[in-house]
Amino acid sequence: MVSILHNQSLKSFNTFGLDVSARYLVEVHSLDELKGLVKSEEYLSGQHLFLGGGSNVLFTQDVKGLVVRNLLKGIAVVNQSADDVYVKVASGEVWHEFVLNCIANGWAGVENLSLIPGSVGAGPMQNIGAYGVELKDVFYELEALDLESLEVKVFSKEDCKFGYRESVFKHELKGKYFITSVTFNLQQHATLNTSYGAIQQQLNLKGIAAPSIKDVSDAVIAIRSTKLPNPNVLGNAGSFFKNPEVESTLFSELKAAHPDIVGYPLESGNVKLAAGWLIEQCGWKGKIVGNCGSHKDQALVLVNYGGATGAEVYALALSIKKSVFEKFGVEINPEVNVI
Ligand SMILES: Cc1cc2nc3c(=O)[nH]c(=O)nc-3n(C[C@H](O)[C@H](O)[C@H](O)COP(=O)(O)OP(=O)(O)OC[C@H]3O[C@@H](n4cnc5c(N)ncnc54)[C@H](O)[C@@H]3O)c2cc1C
Image (tube, rainbow, N blue to C red):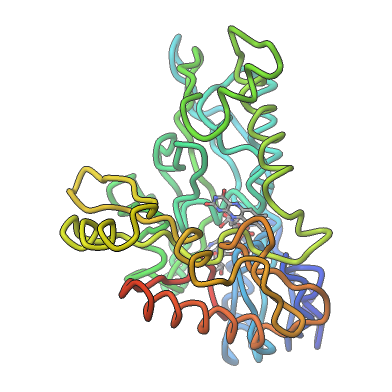
């Protein structure tokens, strides 16, 4: 049986570095431990929260129930052909370590997703994405424990209903499953995607004309390391808000009023706006409010300058949201899970 600790600080388990406490804290290393835990008094006593790397949560208060840290480990090839390789990864594996493992083995597909913090199991929650690639592009299936029946269910890509930073697990199935493993469909021969962001520029800078997946990963790591604040130095959870989608008619009106507005046309006909640009136009970039603020280089990233509370960060987020709505009539919503 797992050992359950009482009244533990979660400061080192969330990348915002917020000093909240959990009434109960436990680590799980196997499916059997998890199943046993779900029947425990502590689990049943009230609120419970699953935590991977804590890089996409904002704790606005202490957790009055049980926090379960996911330490399920293991990476295995379950099938392969001349072109494809299917890799099953336990959900507690660290995402970036998995990416490095793929690169070392020559498995292509996740190199653009290098250096995203957190666990493999949280990846499907919001269909993580970066530099023109999303998790859904390499997803085959996942297994998740039904927390009521204690049966393990297999979810296909369609079942997961992936969208931009979205999945079924953030909506109708919220809180109903614990993701135990994810199986990826990777490629034995890479088709590289270097057109997005500054990847090609970074490769040119290094004089690399025929890049490997490692070169692309290194380029992404180099770009991210200069662009994003390191949570070990400055508490943050990456982009705080999602980029909002608006109808093309509204985009035309906004473009007429703000010719510099940044928008990306979508297949649906809608336009995705750059939330960072909207926030910057409202004067928030680099602004410090109490112990937190909007980062000086990345308006979309809210940071804890030290000693901030989650409530303070959340109040800042609401003020930003309000001013964006007042100026542009556009609603921006958090990507981060507010607890
Ligand atoms: C500096 C920085 C940069 C970032 N860049 C990106 C980026 O480029 N792209 C991107 O998409 N994201 C980015 N993020 C956000 C974050 O890294 C991802 O969302 C990541 O997948 C979160 O993983 P985690 O293990 O830390 O999740 P956690 O924060 O621990 O959990 C997130 C949510 O998922 C739930 N959850 C976690 N594990 C499980 C499980 N096994 N079963 C069921 N529910 C679970 C939790 O309860 C919580 O609601 C960034 C964050 C930081 C700090």
